Image (cartoon, rainbow, N blue to C red):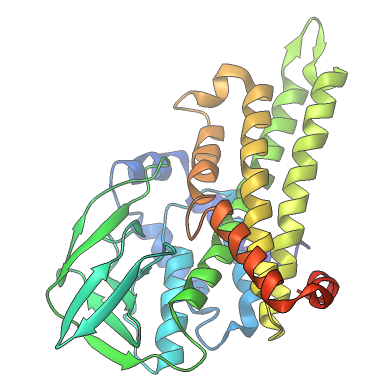
Length: 337
């Protein structure tokens, strides 16, 4: 993806504020107040609130956030505020999340009672409110009005199962163009953007380490085997980045984007595993030490590739879309998204 003024600005913000101390504290459950306040002041959570036409800008910011492993629900807040704005509901001015986020999860409302299942909600117990999508309604449930069974992903980020909803703050019927599957699809694109950024950071760390680490009298970057591995790492990171950019452009342009988003999540998920493997091979054991930055990235890559739908789920969705469209639609779908 091209480096723009917005990307450079976001990289500086996250680079200054996502310190090793902040990352370590976040894994202990300490909310990074200063980081979130800076993100709010920069207006990042509002990027797509007025419409998905700004999706390219959103994934640019999320790419920078992923590069620095920012421990905040930025993607989720973007999506929650977009959903609220689309349905005509005022969103709380704080960190938000959405649910359900996993394919197959489903919520319903009857007589004011929310039923169904919504598991693995990112930052559920931490967010000021969770925006829930039922079959026909958007619900804003503020913190304390719902119970969560706490959990974490491999990176130590909160991933919680929704329990009982005691009360709903605000609600509105879903608009024609918005449903749970679309929110999950946009969520998959946001995760793919974060993964693309994390992979670029892993490439930078691995290249720097290979040039600094001396073995047998010369930097290990001089060895052909290491050069080949770094080239493969760069190839995977670039492929994921291009797929994300292509999907974001399709969304922003208002074109049919289901194929492009599915392809982006699949490609980013495939690349994540290979990038993490190569990066740790280049670094050796030091990449797993608590003090090193690499594992902050790779643990997120291993976690994020399965969130908002696994590669298997999106492969099935992509296949279903192609089968439904018919053989004559294959080439146009590949070339136009």
